Length: 130
Image 1 (spheres, rainbow, N blue to C red):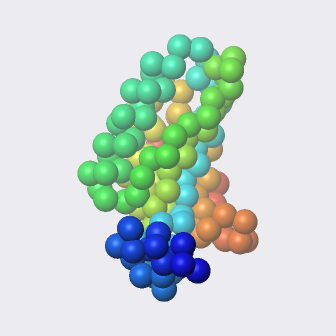
Image 2 (spheres, rainbow, N blue to C red; image 1 turned 30 degrees about the vertical axis):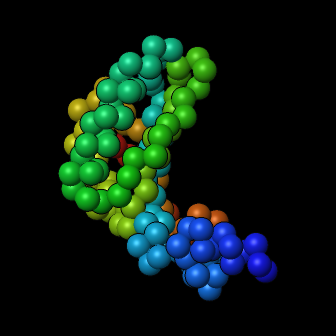
């Protein structure tokens, strides 16, 4: 117990607050938008990185969450984009125009999840189309 108090003092925390629950803002950002695109068609990832910059900017500008990253097949065929925030609908609304302007994400499937993962939260699949 002494080492715990020493560590807490070192970081300016009391031992009681070191095991506190995450702040409410962290708990509220459990919605997700996961975009599965099917036709990237290249191992050159420069177009993907350009898209990521645009998504990050739009999400930050609208204050609707965060862009978390991507996964793409080694052959460049298909992949996923991961975004999180407190409101999946607002998050998707912020990024949809950019997804529609991007050739390889038109026709993609966007999964909107309305709560934390693995909790049975409602999910909705939306096709990225006008």
